[in-house]
View (cartoon, rainbow, N blue to C red):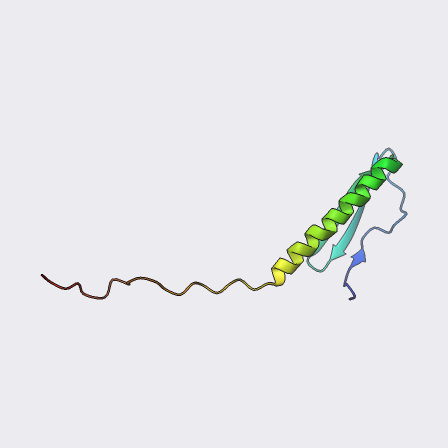
Length: 89
């Protein structure tokens, strides 16, 4: 599947002077995905981020699948609508 998405900031662009973080923006047809991370991210934290990405991929997939699922039909009407006359005593 080909996505109609292009990165807004090319990978490998150096951070602004004095900045302590980097940001990448990925443009999607439905909006932008932005990710910001500290420049001095260590190996252990990078592994944690990788695990978090895996969780986010699963979460995004569930949301996308739910968006494709049509809502259930409304329940059939039940009870009396009040238009039937009550018997007199």
